[in-house]
Image (cartoon, rainbow, N blue to C red; front, side, top):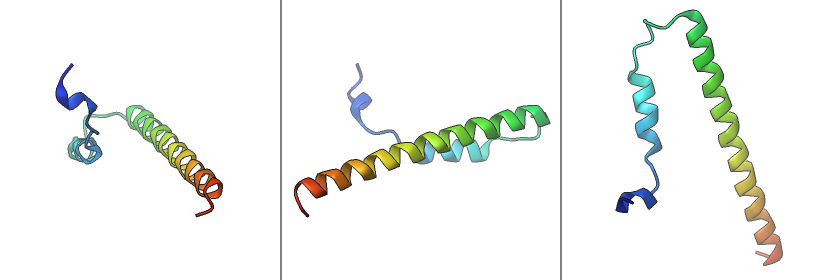
Length: 65
């Protein structure tokens, strides 16, 4: 196991890599699949944010912040 395995990944690197990718070789169907995959990842990220916000609100209510 590498020492860096426990460090958070840099999400900007992924976004930058996607933004640099040439889309010309992709067919319409491939681009639609790509959009669907990206939308699914956005939904997953939003769900994680919602869980974190709800968890924080529960903790704040418990400790009456």
